[in-house]
Each structure stands twice: as C-alpha cells, then as structure tokens.
Image (cartoon, rainbow, N blue to C red; front, side, top):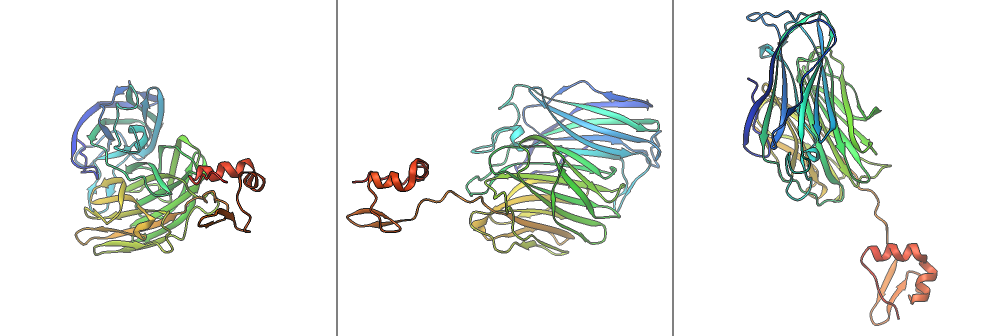
Length: 412
C-alpha cells in the first residue's frame, strides 16, 4: 500500500484505493480502465506500477517499456498527467531496490475549488470528478500489479493581497521513471506568468527543458549539489490560460526521482517579468536564499529540496509539497514586502534551493496634479481644472482613467 505524507494544509484526513489490478502479459495496445469517481476531499493521487525485485521477480524486464497516463476529469473536462517507465530492477541510491514505479500528482488548486478567501476542495465547484488510467505498452511484454490510491485533506488558506498575486499551483513526481514527466496546469487571470521548479535525484542531474503548452520556458537556474541532486527553475511570461500540459525533460533517462512543481501568478510585467535569481545549497539548517532588489509589489517564488522534514520560514506560503523517500521538495511564495529571504528549517541535512522575484505590471498612472488649498486642483503646468479644461486636456479616456482610481472631483 502506498502511503501519503503530511501536507502543509494540516492533517491528512483519509485515503483509499480507487483501483488495484494485476496486468498479465500485456503485449500490445493500450489498456484503458473504467472511470472511477473521486471523493470530494481528494487532494493527491498516486499511481503505482510494481517493479521486479530480487525477492519478487516479474515478467517486466529492461527491454519492456510502459507509458502511463492518469486522466482526471471535472464534469467532463479532462486533465492529463503522463509518465513513462522502463522495466527491470532499479536501485535507488541510499534506499535499495525500488519496489514500484510511482506517478504522484496534485492537481491544480483551482481545479479543486476557489483560489481566494477560504479555498475549497473537490465537489464544491463541479458536479462530478473522476479518474481513469491509460496504460500503453511501448515495448516488450509486461506483467505487473497496478494500484491507484487517493488521499484527502483540508485546503490551505492562501493570501492574495500583493500586486503580483498567486494564481494556483500543480505538482507531480516520478519514482524510477524515464526522465520525462508531464502534468496539466490551469492558469487564469490577466498579465499571467508561470514558474516551474524541477528537482532531480539521478546520476546526471541537469534539466534539459520545460515546456508550457508547447512553448519553451526560460531557464532561470540549473545547478548540481551533493553529486546526485539537481535543482532547476524556469519562468514564462504570458502562458496560455486554461488547462495546459507542462512537460519536464531531464538529462538522465533512468533517474531515481524526478519532481515538477508549477506555480502561476497574475499581475506580472510581460516585458520584464522577473528580477535576478539566487541559489544556495548546504548541509546544515536553515536552507536560506536571499533574492536581491525585491520590490514591495513583487512575488518571490522558491524551489527547495532537503533530505529531512522542513518547516516553512516567516511570511512564506507553501504552494507545492512532494515527498520521495527521504527527500522533501517544497515550493513557496512570499510577498515582496517581506524582503526576499526564503528559508526552511530542519534537522541538519543536505539541501539545495533557488528563488526568483516576479515583477508587477505597470499600473495606469493618473495625470500629474497639484492640490491647492481653497482653489481646487491644478494640472502640473498650473492650469486650473474646470469641467471644460478637464475635458479639453484629458479627453474621455483620461477622465475615465482618473475616475477609475477613485479621485473623481466635481470642478467649479
């Protein structure tokens, strides 16, 4: 049975098996399961495909390859999460033989309900939520055991006060996959931007690319720490709104673990969306990185992994949370008013982190004015503002812009 970790939202309140089935001698085509109704409080789904081990051999050797797709549907609208697994025995560094391949997904927050006020989970924005599996034989003959499990918990509260505002987040991870991981992320709002954090535990620790709806994201950082660990961050201004596929490709085709977290935000400058990123790594607590030149209206985002259970730092809100073995991957946001120091505390362990600030879009500026006591207002060139002069100098668009900022004044 595959278990779940504690999430930032508090105690995980339940779990259950959606599907368990032996797959015997799959030699061609695609096996599609029936759709299973997802409970209303679902927050994470784990797909497990048993691997052969020394103690429990299976007809699923290194010449066999399986494509796995988890399709989550909200009132008929499908969101697809995809991975790929090559058979044979796989050894995870420091853990021994892997008993199973895993694809773990946390669907987009907005998919689960409201993203302002008190966020909700499933069952509060749509009528029916379901999940199904698509298992595609890509090579060889495959005999294995497939299991699909859901976990439930209450939703975390999220602040939405800064100019650049958190929109939503999605994350997924693979254990002993083939180095390509896809998830479905749904962004909504104006002046959108997206961040993707990648964590790797493998022999080759470089990230090759992340694409968002087929568009290549810009790499902000990509570094190796403690030999087998890689941390990368990507950003994109103006991502396509709605449900879109985000795909992470890494340099190792036999990684032990591969993590992908995506955060979208609104109110971001589309020309200069970010500042200068910062990275750090170490072996003692805390895991701290400081982003420079952070403005009050910025939103700082980080991507961190540590081989311990971390506690989030001051003024930060957790956006994604993945656990693989002893590895804890976290993504968080922080309003620019907090100064740009992103930190996590824990019992001393190996860690790596990176962070970047997203910059606000330029607000519509009001026309320059000088208030004079007793005589109303003047434009900057000292012209008195009467209703006639107002219309002549600003035109209708200027008047509407000024009124929209709440400064309406009835002239003399």
